[in-house]
Image: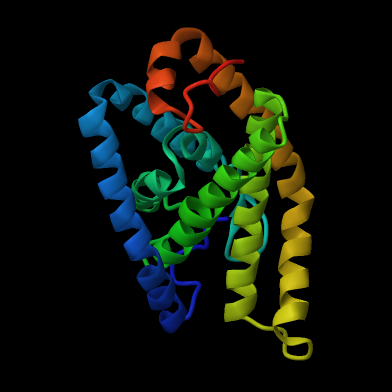
Length: 226
């Protein structure tokens, strides 16, 4: 998913950065508000950030100019809300660009938009819909993490197709090409990420039930029940 350094045209790189900046800024405000109210949530925030950093660093080659890997953003989106994941993902992507040559500084805005904004918002929406439909908690977590991962890659495919439309078929043909190549590796990765997120959430429920209760995941304080 990380689009590599220098791969996007300059105007696209600037545009995605401008689109991502306000969400990251609001996410910082959201995190500060939550931490000031419940300082004990810092440890869970660190767990969510570490989960995102480790999973999104496990890259494998995919479409030229990008790669495939789990995203790890679904856990943070469920725990702290999608906007809080934007600054977490921004920091993760910045460190990976600087320390691991994974992604890039010129493509940071585009990568933030797909992995730290679209993916988490999709994950949070799927989780709420699953709980509203009275799906078991674990099923909701699995669907949220898996579909959040997949929609991250759909967004990356759209970004690449928008930057490099097919000479004949335009954006649609290019999108089909990029999404088709991503699907080969990303569908099994998304399923794996969903299962791993359920395992991690169950561990948090077992050992951090009090902190999870203070997060009030769905507004009534009862959704942390396994």
